[in-house]
Image (cartoon, rainbow, N blue to C red):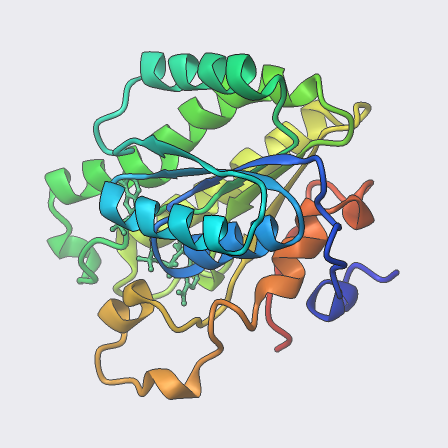
Length: 253
Ligand code: NAP
């Protein structure tokens, strides 16, 4: 299977992720919500992490309604969480489920798009806290547990502006470059193990974040979160064993 073209064409079977325990951050809305539903539909036990409990409960209920394995909810605001929160959370996952086979680190903060010279220090700090430091602390806490699983998949979320800087995307763009680097460092360190680390770039997708960034755009012209799921399912499934240190576009250009 070619890694350049196959992820978008991947067809997951109904038990593709059976017996896997997978954490999804930002699981209450947008791409994270759909990924949680799609992973559950393929048999995974999904741990829903996010900051708005009502949204997480709605996803939990949708998973219950499709008779998929019972999900779990972890309410956590990445903006305020400390290292101890991530360590405690990982211990809870280990106690409750015994393992973690996959983690989709999807939650992110867009912030305000502005000229570089107008970015405030507070704004910069919040972007780096949510989009970089929390991803570092979370992945650092999860890795020892994930490494115990056979063929665990750690999946970071990047962006086109994390590969090519773009005017007015300031701290968000810089934070996504950092995510690309974080994933590559981990992939290289774990290269001789069964654990893989990759980045996924969803591409323009019909979500609240996209509508905030492009208020004049007709959302109907965009792919939906469901449309881009083949790549997410591919990277979480055993079909992608051996794929590591890569940055994969969820959409065909
Ligand atoms: P979204 O619709 O805004 O959803 C983001 C999710 O992350 C929401 O559930 C949100 O929770 C959660 N979140 C945000 N800040 C959080 C925090 N401090 N603590 C915990 N959870 C937090 O965004 P999306 O478009 O699905 O984006 C998902 C990922 O794809 C992001 O990493 C984004 O950068 C990336 N991306 C998206 C696009 C696109 O076109 N949509 C393109 C390139 C990259 P609440 O619901 O409580 O706000």
